[in-house]
Length: 165
Length: 340
Image 1: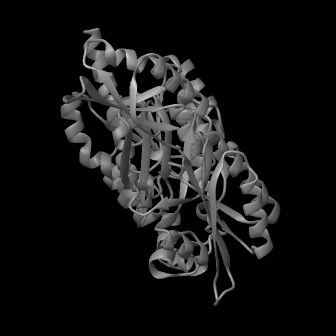
Image 2: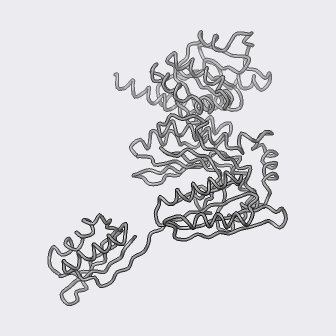
Image 3: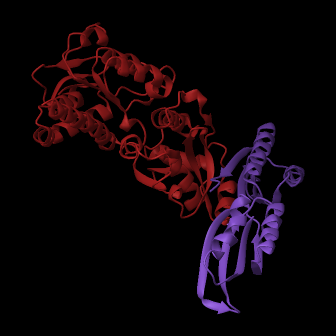
């Protein structure tokens, strides 16, 4: 989870280190720090910190530490990091199979979203389905791939995967 | 440097021509005489310890269908024992079943401490370990830039120029025929069979296209990259391989609606070894069209490095072979300087 926080710190030396310590001691990953020396309000300066944590619990721990250290959190927003996957399935895919594929993926842990597009050629009757989705953990990408590989092998479909970038 | 050319088809003749054109420049750059002292095709040979005129042999081959006198039942390896040479350019046809005759030819050279430069994928994809161990044991050098990517310098780039990098993975389009077919399907809305026929008519695909479209050629190249760059010990059969036969026009069009193209991609890393059709975003380097080859090398310091070029052809392959000969000359030159 990526978190953006606007902190108001006392304009005295050592305050920034004091504010960042709870992030590193909770094994968070500091991505960026912007220090606004020119915006002093009520004797406090504003610092924008962007960091990554693995869980809500970890974030709560950091917030609690800040409170103890008299770090004023003016604004906090978090964004869930997701990993995208995309697959193209080619073969004689019956509509019932599409339901089973989406159900299978939806039942997985750490799934954020899944979407499917189905296409049948009016001329040749060729069928193809494109599956897009997002997962919350990178490890879940492998579970999706294993599931689709297995289903495709059983049914004789060609599975075309994205580059995973 | 005394060179023999073993195999005198399209590539062998290209090497002869390239050497003929470039030998004077190389001789003056490296202060070493370069002679082609033997040329062999499947049934005949021309040997001269003082050096042949490679162009003359090409003309003879074109006119008579052979390079010189018949070997008269003598085995090539038997004749080879009496030839004095430093480097064998091994360019007999690729055989992906057992790697022969290329494997035995290369082993004969390496076992006797002679260097080998080759474009022959079969022996490298099937018995890389045997070849490299024999080379090492006998103080010989084995170079094979031309075996993957034709004129596109990927092996020497990764092994030499990028030696200080950690290479995470290499992805590449290594078969121009498949790329041509997939590209024609997308651009012209042609069904697979029709695009394949077009590739055959234009001479990109063989009458039996399975070597290309079933991913056999790409898998052989993937195995070579895995062994040479990731120091893995794999063979062609270890590659997870899916060809492009099953790619329908409907699938290509559906991908296109999502601004993606389908490409046959070889992907190699320490843990992955695969050739399969992949969805590639339009505008991505791997979405390259035509018959070009392209490689994306993912490294820790330099980030992604992309190289593209012609993957096949007489002079293109000869160019890659020449780059390996130049590397040998350069190394010899450095060794001479160090000794003196």
